[in-house]
Amino acid sequence: MSDCIFCKIANKEIPATVVFEDDDLLVFMDIGPIIKGHALVIPKKHYDPVTKTPDDLLAKLHLTAKRIAQAQMNGLGADGVNIMQNNGTAAGQEVPHIHVHVIPRFEGDGHHWNWNAKKYDDFDEMAELADKMRKHL
Ligand code: AMP
Ligand code: ZN
Image (cartoon, rainbow, N blue to C red; front, side, top):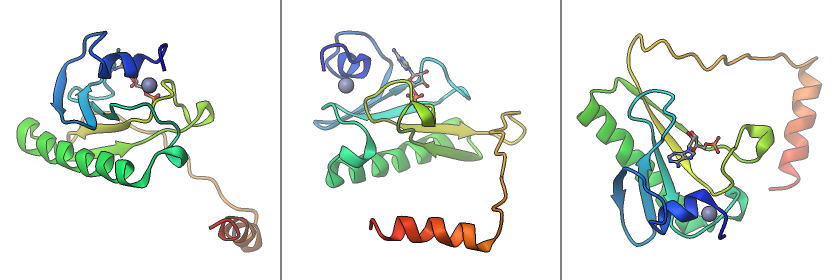
C-alpha cells in the first residue's frame, strides 16, 4: 500500500519514535496522544480490518500490546491502560492499516471516554441481535 502512512512508517520512509520492533511488528508513539505515552502496535505488512488480519498475526499484535501495557505501568507509572482497536470510519478509524492503541491511564488524568450506555427497548430486542450474531459464528 504505497499511500498508507503506517506502511511508510514500517518501511522507515517517514519518521516515528519506535518503542519496539521485530520482523513482524512495529510499536511507535502516537503523535496525537490521548494521554502522553500512548503507543500504537502495527504489523509491518499491510492488513485491514481486523476480520482480514491473519489469526497468528492478530494474536501477536495483542500479545505485544499486553507487553507494552506492562511497560507503561512499570516504566511510566501508569495506574491502568486502555487497549483499543478501531475498524472502519463508523468506528472512528482514521488510518486503515490495523493498529492497536495502548493508552496509559493515571488516576485523575481527567480523560473520559463519554461511554454513553444505551438501553434496549426490551429483552427480546437484545436476544434478537444476539441470535443474528450467533447465526454467523
Ligand atoms: P485510528 O483513529 O484508530 O485510525 O487511529 C489513528 C492514530 O494514528 C491516531 O491516534 C493518530 O494520532 C495516529 N497517527 C496518525 N499519523 C501518525 C504518525 N505519523 N505518527 C504517529 N501516529 C500517527
Ligand atoms: Zn499500510
